[in-house]
Figure (cartoon, helix red, strand yellow):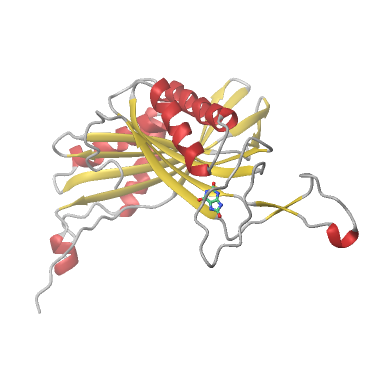
Length: 286
Ligand SMILES: O=c1[nH]c(=O)c2[nH]c(=O)[nH]c2[nH]1
């Protein structure tokens, strides 16, 4: 039987980087989790153990820290682009770089004091290859949303295993993970992030929902019709079930007031929305 090497990549996962900028007594921080992943002429290292083409993952991690000092961080997409281009352009054996960054938000508690924001995490994934092709996907995760009304779910298939009762007024809760693909370069990733985030929040709040799937589509559609530079949105939204507690054994009514917030199992609704004329995604989602 003959075998061959399949797709492969390697890098340093989850380099934790906190950068402090001291502006007199007022300090600023950025808190990142950076993962680099490289691919290229890697047959020899896998087949014979010849490491000549390998830029060590340790060097990749050091580059993350060195670049944060030399260039600053700024928008995570810009920092990821800087790193991805560097790895491909400085090493002939590296043909493709993928850089993923999560950014954790801190709120100001004083001039040099910060409170970790328990809310969502900002994300990006950048790819760059030696043919100069670049893709940028921005996103967020752990954005927890809940509507106390305006959500129904009925009219679904009823088979021999269906016990779910139709709902005409239920709680709809989710933790949004959203990623959006940029169709073109922008120098305003921060502004675009705020715009997409607002679209997602507004569409969740003002869509009268007949299913979480419908809400998901409305959220993606709102982002695409508002933000010109993005061409595709992918969303993953767990249905964080809230079950009305049956208080009848105690002779008590429960008029949509007291719920049990279940943590598992949960429905998981995933889907994408894209412009009809979206350019080919290439390796953006890999
Ligand atoms: O919005 C929903 N979509 C579903 O597909 C589904 N399935 C289910 O049991 N509850 C729900 N809710």
